[in-house]
Length: 382
View 1: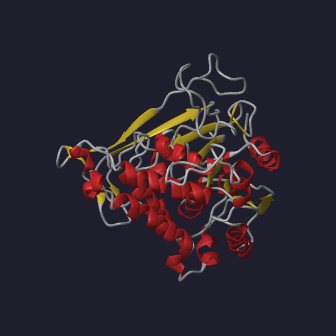
View 2: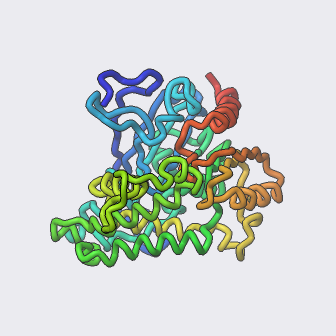
View 3: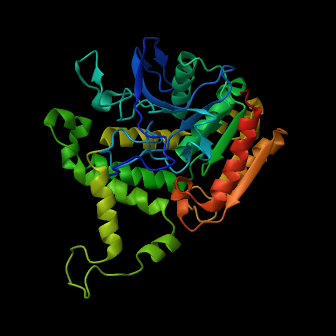
């Protein structure tokens, strides 16, 4: 834990909560009569209110983008590498907003929240939410914050899908769309990975059909397997070979089923650290939102047609070793944007870190994204 806040960090931060009484009609057909969104802001909104940047989080991300909650806090926000004073997303120049999505487990209304109709946690009764539902709720929060138009909406992975949805649903309310390591829809292979993870959770005896809160238990086994599987898809073969190879924890094998290889130890550590910090019902919801995302479905699969509504300038980034959301998926987005004569910049970052590369301070990544953010900052009024 830091005895002092590391140089370059935004420092100590705190989250806020906004309660909405305006009903939210969801894509699934259900309605949330009231809900709460937890969010964090960094930097200052300028007098012209044109320097606001929304950062959308990925599956296991949160509203906590940067900084520390206390001097005893062991872990900064998940994008500490990029968000802060003088960093790529410069909080000296931008007013940065992070939101915990609906259905989340870090403060926003979700399965762990109390259902006013039963006075018990929603659990599996919490409705399925979609990327479009998240964008609608984020739009309402922006209005409460006095932001009519975002200078940029940015996101990686599932966050990048939210950026695409923003550009379609509210084209006049963002000037720049930055889509990182994302796709316009999941491949069958990706949907399959998500289903295996969900089955691991749902078949855990401690899951109790999603009512595990009432049994004062957690489907730990299922969550651990889901996290291990997910983590495998975030890393490339090269980075796993570099980090672990076939290294043993001890000098010889034991001929049993204990932890013998370093990679086994790593995966179990990741799984153990995930359990207790993430809710199983939320994991199910988030993976379903990933599966359902396909904005082109409304146009018979024609992505160019649905992106005809977009007006923002786009910056699309991919990573060479990302096999979960490969550069080919970014190329599909770019072609659809070009079909509509939109301004598009693209960078394919050389990296052997796999999908997780979008979280890391890779020099080429920081350079190209930093240059684009500088362009956005120069357009904002002082």
